[in-house]
Length: 344
Image (cartoon, rainbow, N blue to C red; front, side, top):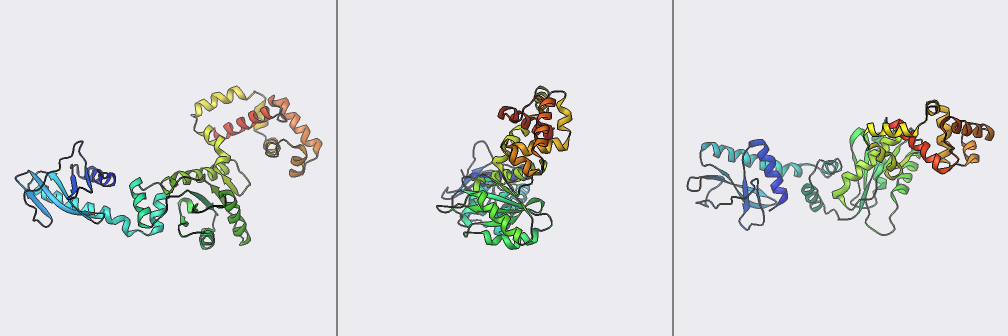
């Protein structure tokens, strides 16, 4: 049975409450809303649209699906069923033509946002000859500059399948298809976009997804890119490019119920540590130190802070929290506490 047609018929059943059977004469396409199909031939085959067949106790109707002529049927052969048959024909015509009336960009947006079924995505791929190759999403967010971003983004379309669409929150989603050897890695492409737009006076943030197998998985990629940007905002990250894998630890912790996070926090955080984690200056110092791979010299230069002042603050963190963030294991624990507190 055809899965796409089955989905469509079940959607119609939700609206009408009627079970529908359908098939092509060649049986190339067949579908039913029943647990067991009830495919019955009409007593008379020479009818134009709807036929109330008293002999079989069914009402038959013709419709088209993927350029094929199909016969549909519902139980009953009275005037009521005849009216229902016309209604179902109308719903089928509306469903089959809905996607055809949408542009490439409108359909791709629905695919990115996860509004299309797997069968609809496959139909889109056939219609527009989209190859079954790896792809990924770059989500470009530029507050107040969406129109300018949309004007410039076509420069980054390297093949006929790449596309830019406006998605949620006035952000631009660039769908990139990996069609050849030596393709630029997503992060590098993202930095190129930031640099080009920056030269035009446009400041943007870019969320980068992982590479997925094909367009059927592009919604997963979009969710990853949006998650990266969302978590970057949560942590007030200053960088312009944010990859999903950079925030995978945060996402894992975010997926844990909050009551469990609270339990973990009560174990990890000592009483005196609360003052440190509520002190913006101390947190900024600690995070800079962690981001610079526990390097005192790099951190002091980045913060424009005297080396002795930095060391004093690191020592104070150890006294208050019991964590010597110069040690990797304690640095990881400090980071975990920081993440959990922000999630809570």
